[in-house]
Amino acid sequence: MDKYAVRTQNGKHASTAAEARAVAEALKAENPGCELILKAQVHAGGRGKGHFIENGLKGGVKVLTEVDEVESFAEQMIGNTLVTKQTGEAGQPCSLVLVNEGLQIESEKYFAILMDREYNGPVMVASEQGGMDIEEVAETSPDAIVTEPIDIFAGVQPEQTERLARSMGFKEENIPEAQKQMSNMYDMFLGTDSTQVEINPFAEGSYVGRDEKSTVFCVDAKLGFDGNSEFRHKELFAMRDTSMEDARDVEADEIGVEYIGLDGNIGCMVNGAGLAMGTMDIIKLKGGDPANFCDLGGGVNEQQVSAAFGVVAGDPNVKAVLVNIFGGIVQCDIVAEGIVKAYTSSGSTLPLIVRLEGTNAEAAREIIANANISTLISAEDLDDAAIKAVASIQ
Image 1 (cartoon, one colour):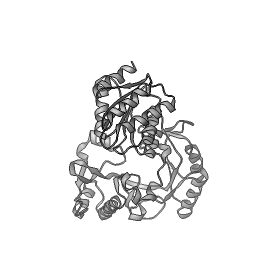
Image 2 (cartoon, rainbow, N blue to C red):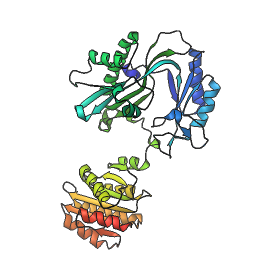
Image 3 (spheres, one colour):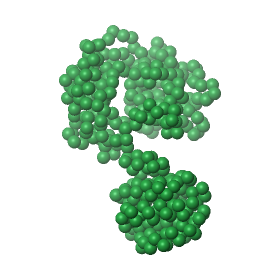
Image 4 (cartoon, rainbow, N blue to C red):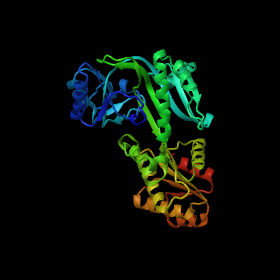
């Protein structure tokens, strides 16, 4: 954000309580009268109202005045698990904290740049009601949210940022700076191949303990990036902290398949996103609950099929696995070989229902039949496969 002249508070991350203390001491040396803001770094909002599982500490955000307090609270945060309304009961591990110089905040706004299908491109979203969940604002006060679609050829226009700054209620003297910050954020959005730049609060205020005029700050940010751009932004993607992600998602990413964990008990392995969605729908239609979305893709090989089975079957909630492959680019016999190898080597006893159609489907069915495994069940079509999958766990 500094690279794009987006104004944030003075401060740094720390991975230990001692490092947090050092950052706090440096901020105090620069401004002895400053407040110190300590924030647990997890991939979820609502940190201020959260709690830590291990020690019961309330709040993942602390406003402090003394260096000793920063060190003490950092020690209670780092290495422990923060639960917020966005993490679920399992929470997320906190391995980093952020120590910032505190602000005297006069007003809190909301600002974001998002990709929006309705406009086929990026849209700026703003609200005068910042500092709270935008979903709650959208539900209770939808008129408080203002949008400005961006022409990707012309870019953000001054009249657009002025309209947004005024709709957010910035002071007259801060409107030019608010416009500048919004324009800089769009430059960052483009320059980093972002899919989301969300600032909440987008605030006006000044540093505590400094005799300075009010200006505009990006106090808290949530950024999302297009995974296809990793080759252009290796330094950004190197910051990825997989400890806060679902281990199944991470493993699937490493082997090159698309995976999203769900709450059901019938695992799915499918080639093609549309077919995967249809498979999950028909499982629900037949009275079951899908445990995941898993798209093997068109160019999957035997090793990837085997590894993907390990991810899907490794979910402790999974009681049966349904494989639904329509062979086009991917050959059904390659998938069948991978399934049999993975199933036998894993020692799994889960019912495995397999529907294979398309390129080399007959050869694939022979491979399944010759495996001579009672829990490996062939299906004629998708309807038959879903019925058998649901029946296998009842």
